[in-house]
Structure formats: structure tokens, C-alpha cells
Length: 269
Image (cartoon, rainbow, N blue to C red; front, side, top):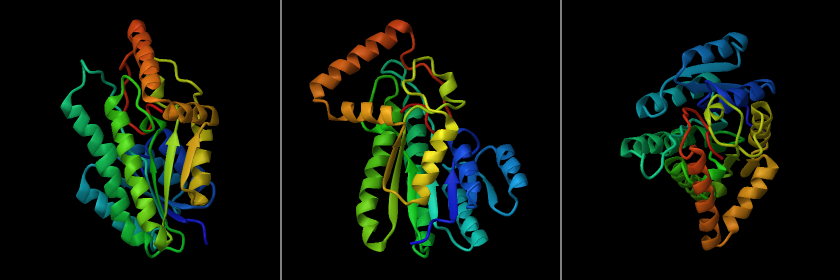
């Protein structure tokens, strides 16, 4: 089967999404990039006028998102893949969490991501190499203290992808779950806590690009963080709860529990 050649990606103004666009353009792929900040998109369009389509909008605007996906399909003569990459993280603890922040995280990381996939599905059904992909996180594998809304949103998105993967298999439509650990970006630079196995943005984007073009089902990186998260995922509940309480106590003692500011794709693994 052919590789995806016409790809739409959300959340590409900076960080991992922007680096992913660069990695795919370097491979000759045509990319439609969705982001709220137009200046970054215009710069990409100036450098790649024939292969990059800028689409400036907020992914939580359903009508604008649906129209943008239709525009990308019309411009490229169809779509082969879509990557729901846009996301936000609002660190919070039981004492600081606000329901309006939870709603904003879920609307961006879950509802908008799901709409991105579903709005693109009719176009992908006409592709010789269809792929639905989303950037989740290892934080969705097992939640840690200080980022409950973000962890919950990624767990929900992972579950949705699992269901889609089974439902669409008979049609030959692949569903890819991209689960990064900590990746260097504008967001992670604001984190006040130590980030194990921090990965450079370009290297992470290369992993994503390869997984997309190979139409894989799962990818996570870097390998040491994947191994650590895999182990935590399989610990007995009582043991994991004990470790999580120890981490929360340490972060509280250091004054970093729930301390970070983020607006982008992967603020937490």
C-alpha cells in the first residue's frame, strides 16, 4: 500500500507539531497545518508554497475545523492522513483545580481531537493509504500527581483510538496512537520539576514522521521513558498508589506540585 502523501495536522504553530510539519515537508509530503497563531504558518507557507497549506483557526470551533478539513481535501485532491496533535495542559491539584479549566482541557484534548478525526474520516475512506492519528501521552497510561485534567484527557483519547482501531480495521484504515514522553519545547521549558529522559524536539518529530508514513498503530518515545511508564502501568494498584504519594510529597516539599504553564501539545508525559 502507498505511503500517506497528503496530511493534515493540528497544533503546528510551535513545538512538536511544528517540528513534525518540517520533518514531513522534508520528505516531500504535502501538509495542511492547523493552528491559532498565523505567523508561524505564514513562515512555513513562504518556504514551501507548493506543499504547505496554512489554516488559521481554533480547533475548538467545530464549524471552522470542519471547513478547514474540507478546504485541505479540496486543495490537495483528497487526504491520506490526519494527525490530531493540538492539545493543552493546565497543571492543577485538588486545591487549585477549576472546573472551567477541566472543561477547556477536555474540549481541546478530547472533543476537538475526536472531531478532527471524524471530520476527516469521509475523505480518508477515499485514500489508498488512510491513517487516523492522534498525539496522546504516556500520562494517559497511568496518571500522576499535579496534572489530573491532562492525564484524564489523554486516557480518554487513548480509549477512543483503541475503539476506532478495531472498528475501522476491516476498511483498511489504520489508527495510530502517538505517545511521547517529555519533549523539549516552549511548554516544557516552563516546567518547574525534573523531567526524566527529556527528548529533543527534532528527534521526537522524526519518530512521529516515521510512524505516520509507515502507518503504524502505536509509537512511544523515548525508549527509556516508555520502559519506565510501561512498568508503572503494570504495577499493582497499591504499589503504584504508594509511589505516586511519594512523588506528590516530594513535589509538594519542593514547591513544584502542579506548577507549570502550558498551551500546546505535550506538557507532561
